[in-house]
Length: 301
Figure 1 (cartoon, one colour):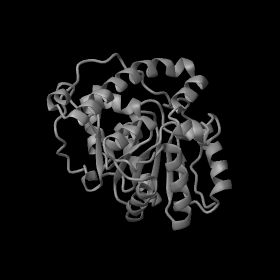
Figure 2 (tube, one colour):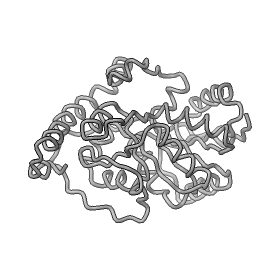
Figure 3 (cartoon, rainbow, N blue to C red):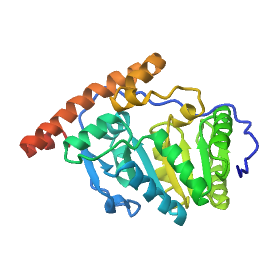
Figure 4 (cartoon, rainbow, N blue to C red):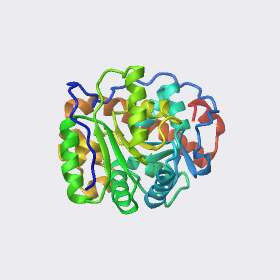
């Protein structure tokens, strides 16, 4: 494997935790996005709650990303699950970030089921681990350089060992953790320049939701590469967390599989996001079936 890795960082603290949300407040009213950075209007979309999810198969989504990567276009790809959609429902600023993303893939099966029930009958899951492995394979075949950003040095080292074994021709230009604290303007400028000079077409970002999505939004137009927020995919690929069996993923029970592994960390988040998502999803499906527009308006859907 061709690789040019930086020296391990001396910083001791890194951001890998997810936020825990507060109970459901009154919904906010989302204004229509006007940012010139929003470029995903040319891609098919499906509204789930009040977030636009890109309605592409895994293969078509990966082909689109690779086309962007070859041209080194500045793009942001969000990988959405129930947690992310509820973040967007509760927080207008984060909702705007998703609206301005260039692609928002349906990572969780509940989103896939919603899209199918709303008319996208052929929609399949476009999940973080599948994205990571598919793009690494295609990048190794098509000579696209990749940059890994975030997580911890120990996780990145384990990932590098596996990547070298599975994709020997993958050109990894850097695997760089970031500190928990915000970067100074000088540090941020140096990071942008490092990514630019590396020639990377793909930047895999693992900072946790919603930090990674905010980071990508802040760097749209600055980083000339496709930024993809992969969250928990790094430690899974590194082998520190188990990936649910295929039948568990297809049955939509990956959340339960993860809950059994990390009950203390995930119980609070799941108990605060899954029930309101189910309620809001039912409201949207009833309105879709019987078309009472006032029902959707009442819940900002």
